[in-house]
Image 1: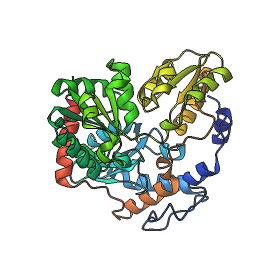
Image 2 (image 1 turned 180 degrees about the horizontal axis):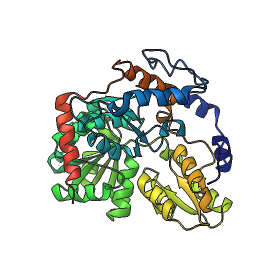
Image 3 (image 1 turned 90 degrees about the vertical axis):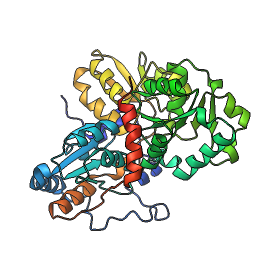
Image 4 (image 1 turned 180 degrees about the vertical axis):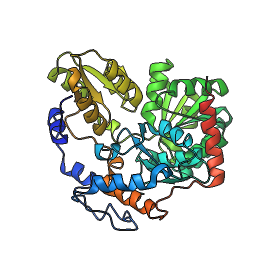
Length: 398
């Protein structure tokens, strides 16, 4: 397989970093938007030529005491040290299957580390290398906002008929709310099964927090209409909806979205079809409905990887998902004569995922090797129990 550098890959994918992208990637700074994200220790310099060796040495010293999880959207410099890679729920399950590991280092974002803490043993310590690695989508639904929404549904006389379904990309508090009110969690792989189950329990679904996954699954997979869906805006009184609109709706979609997948547009699809004749457009279901409708294939991260693995040599693909993964897949399958390009011409890294870089990983591993407990993610017991109830309902889906 030919060696392709990151710079070459970026050129091949026809994208260039914007000043904002450089800020979000940590190559620039804005003190107004980055308050309170310092590590309680000295980070190694990103220019330290010994970072890779330091990470290897610290990991070797820790041995089986540490288990490193790497989400698909992570940088290559971090992925190289991951014991397993995958999407958020797969990684949380992988962590639970390693009870001998004292430390679970989750190279992902905060809600993923919470899920790992919920599913692992009490004595295991889940560590997030940078506590500022959050998720904008998960942050779009707070416990207070969702509780207020439930009050609105109660006042409309429909709460007892509504089943909450929450995407895995949500906080432990939202998962706990879902468990408490008889709902289930879903991933982008099993959202259709989760919604079918929910409609067997009630006649309405409150889908949290990603409106696009909820809408796309309901319309594309279940055959509902766009008119069956209403959008609940937590920043407006009563969600911006009347009681009649709530009573008539089948899908009550939370006004949340992925900051990465939400950037793709119908123009992106049309432009890449003109630029790359014969291209197959493959996108994640967190994309907008018009993008999903115009694509050739739609599926989860694992689905995207599988499709490209099985694609014939010489085929052309435009991928609508996070850029780190697209670049990695383009490099991986270049030797198979598969042309893989990014769906959009502008950079679309997951900015918070990119906060986990090699300096943070080195600092984390060296600190743990020195016996220091750092950046531990712990979910309060009552919240964890209710969240686990919702997760168990998902695991029991037919």
